[in-house]
Amino acid sequence: MSLDGFIAGLNQSEENPLGEGGMKLHEWVFGLAAWRERQGQDGGEVNASTKVVEESLENIGATVMGRNMFGGEGPWGDDPWDGWWGDDPPFHMPVFIVTHHPREPVTKKGGTTFTFVTDGIESALEHARAAAGGKDVSLGGGANVAQQYLKAGLIDEMQIHLVPVLLGDGARLFDNLGGADVGLECTRVIEAPGVTHLTYRVLHSLPGRSKQGHPLDVVSEKPRSADHTWGLLESRGTRRQALK
Image (tube, rainbow, N blue to C red; front, side, top):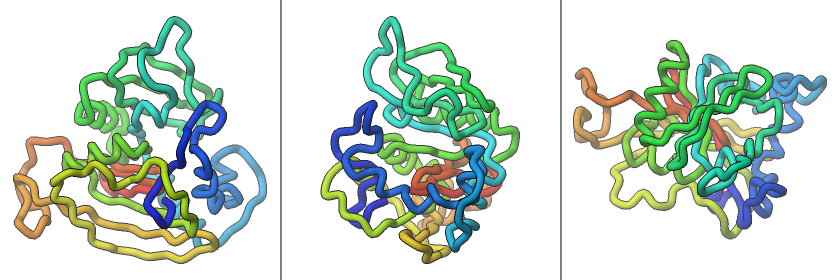
């Protein structure tokens, strides 16, 4: 995330999926050995970000993301586009897309299958938790779907990757939260080259939680949480985290 709160720049397009200047938000990760190995590449750096990336990829069984994060908007048309991610996406797991427009699943190389969920964020989370088989669920973004999960009280932990860049405009992570009662408790800060990693536990004053926002010892009628990995925003199946 940029210092002024954006997770993507203006004018996102097929040629420029992160918008103007958005690629700068992720440059810290591209040279890491931990990231390159995940993409089938050799070499790379090891620094303070290495542990953060390795932890973010551990025990993840499924990912949830919004339609824009997958790619495109509106009806799919007769020849639907397969999104930003190419033939071998970096997920290597089931991915569930929150959208208004139904579509058959799209299967890619490396174990990634995109499934399109049209009946809301809680349904997408339920599908993802079932597919994860007891592992964590990662919420991959974008901003709009992250805001929906925050307002619904379905994110347990967020990891913000704060980059010393000012984008000025674009998609801001914490817009459109209205009167949502969301509290953040910082649990870890890691400084690394080109980025500061901030981990927050999310506290919600919701039914079944105390006035201080801490979960009560009750059985919830709602699905537990969604993780988010991005920068990485994730929810816990057993452990949750999120990046941006």
